[in-house]
Image (tube, rainbow, N blue to C red):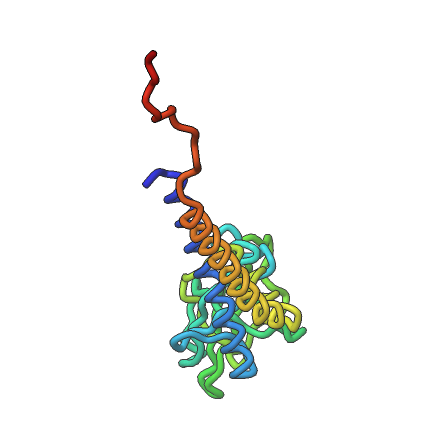
Length: 198
């Protein structure tokens, strides 16, 4: 097997895996009415560069939800809801726990930002903790996949691919059958009649 064939097979496999993940994400998202979740981990899309280079723009990240939201310390990366109801994934740079009410307040900052976030984060607004698992650029496709247009497209594309594959397979089978039935082409051979000598 040459290098070109190996590269082609690898690329096809990767595209298939990404496509399968996107379809699964859409199905799970629609079924649950919320964010895609796999084995207890939520999949979030990061569409800003505030955490680069660790988390690239357009990446997906795995978030572990639940647990004691007052447990986070300086250096932990958390996902939370900001005052504008937007999900943000930033690093904790300071933590303050109010034991009287059992809540914590965190100061957060994007690794790529010059200053800390202006609004403190209450432990009640934390969604979960970043696990360190991220896949670059898949977030763009994931965002489109869970949209209305993307969901429809992902349901149509597999059917079209199966139809095209069936047509291609039929064409190959017909071509092979025609070639077999044609047999060897007729060619003019030497004259086999005996020479007449006078």
